[in-house]
Amino acid sequence: MSEFGTLESRVRRKSLLSKVCKAEDTIQHFKAGQNLMWSGFTPAGYPKEVPIALADYVEKNNLQGKMKFNLFIGASVGAETEDRWATLDMIDRRWPYQTGKNIAAGINAGRIRMGDKHLGLFAQDAGYGFYTENGRYDIGIVEVSAITEDCGLALTTSCGIVAEALHLCDKIIIEVNTGQPSFEGIHDIFMQNKPPRRQPFLITEAHTRMGTPYVPCDPEKIIAVVESKRRDKGRAFAEMDDTSEAIAGHIMEFFSHEVKRGRLPENLLPLQSGVGSIANAVVGGLAKGPFGNLSVYTEVLQDTMLDFFDSGKLNYASACSLSLSESPGFPRFFENWDKYFGKCVLRPLSISNAPEPIRRLGVIAMNTPVEFDIYAHANSTLVGGTRMINGLGGSGDFLRNGFLKIMHSPSVRPSKTDPTGITCVVPKAPHIDHTEHDLDVLVTEQGLADLRGLAPKDRAKVIIDKCAHPDYKPILTDYFEMAKKETLAKGIGHEPQLFDRAFKMQLNLAENGTMKIKNWDIKVDLCE
Image (tube, rainbow, N blue to C red; front, side, top):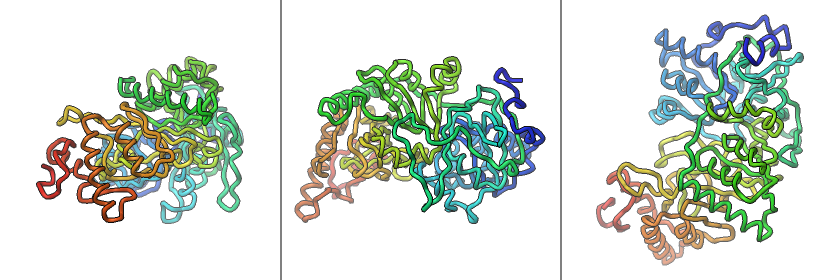
């Protein structure tokens, strides 16, 4: 028995108790090449016992590369599951987002075929049958807190794509997690119809509920019920440093300016914050800032959201995932259950990231890219234009539909070969996930560039002036002036670029270990 109750008390549909078994007993249902759907989102609410048992089985029987599956999950899950599967060569295809050193290595080495997709669109596209030959999935593995008498599933720390997945899977394995309190009641599940019968999402405030706390499930599909006591292996992010604090400071100052101008209310608008250390710093800045009576409408709640609640300035938070760190995040949440639980709602990914409520609520979107260029095209996914990191995630869902679309980044990132580092402001992004049409504001520790109402050449001046590191500012200015002169002389200078030189900084980094090029002349050695 767990301190949080028994399996029998959590499974209220008693006929399912006859299907209780150990994780190892489910291995008989898995065959190479199957299409699998899991619960989980950034790593929260994902199945643990069955994926770990499968990995153990493959490792013990030397089936690496022979027992491979296609994984379809709302976002990333814990490293002890999908990243370990990658080390054992158990993944053929992976959609639409992942996190882990080994799975990223498998993708970039060509062993794993990954598809990147706006997360808010993934569940509906899966339902439309875009990803498998017959539009169906062999097995769904879902972590839950409880099962009701009528087989409604109370999920755990995320919703992800479970609401859609259960109807697409031929068989379902349920993991009932008794190793933590039951999250029954925190979810707001709304089952969508396909067009043309789709109904509006009647969400007018972050705390609006439009559905029920449970995902309906056909009990005949359930082939196994497995008890789990494992908790999420959530990631802790780095503490605030001078760079992240400076970025947060620029954003707070910008919000104050917008309030004074009458373009934002005193309690701002619902806030969305992406994943990572800078996002955590921005939320920390809000917790210490002058604004109160705030709300959050986002996809992931991280540790600093608890600070935000404790400050008394955050009233309510809507998300898809409670992605707290294994320590101290979740223990802190459990110890202060009565304070936090009633202030949060978790929604399916297809609703948390849907354009309709984001646009209606006027969400302020804030996310971190790999880099952005002088015209405000941003790269969130591919280093050097080719090396996949994690995926696009939900950033595009919010940046395309928010009231204010903000991207924040350090002006430079550390490099072993250059004391300044690699510039995050470049002439042209080698891969573009977010176009200039989707971004309003760019921020680095150097300053904030408000791009609203600016034509491309004016935008470039402001980005270089406000966001570029001092060591790179003259290099970027030289490029911009050269590109402007050459393209305007030819009558093609609306957004000046020189494609024979636009990526010279990246080439110089590859060959000489620095992005500080000596000149832009193409008549000499390309990287001189």
